[in-house]
Image (cartoon, rainbow, N blue to C red; front, side, top):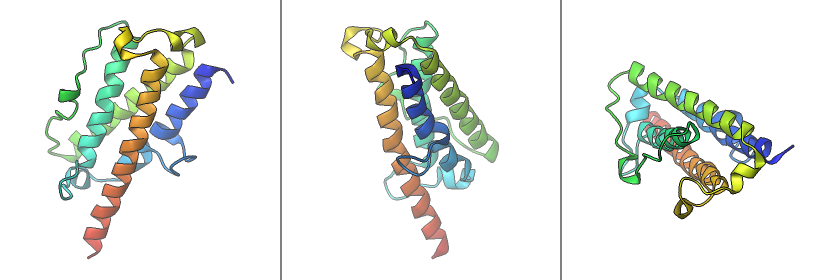
Length: 159
């Protein structure tokens, strides 16, 4: 297995269909909540919808660079989610996240090994590898949050 396949598999595990590290993945978690659960606020935590938007925001930003565009994303906008007012809005967000996840994994799978060590847009942003690893780590971090929030919502319903 070459470097790009190895890293693409790690992305696949956390985003779409893995069970190795967390025994779940983001796709499984977000597809199994209703839009009411997705927008339900638990104390001061972000909602599942907001976290899904946030992860997708970064995927979309890096995909734009992979497509030859500029790095246009900014941390301060990463939670600027449009309102989720219906099941359709939620399903559309999940579909967009899944589309971007698959596209991101495909880009990484096809990436020549030499590309991983190149500067990402500008040296101050590190290498392509560092940014892709950042997506993996960031996604696991938020997967844990999504899983816990989901459990908290379900335990509230049972009471």
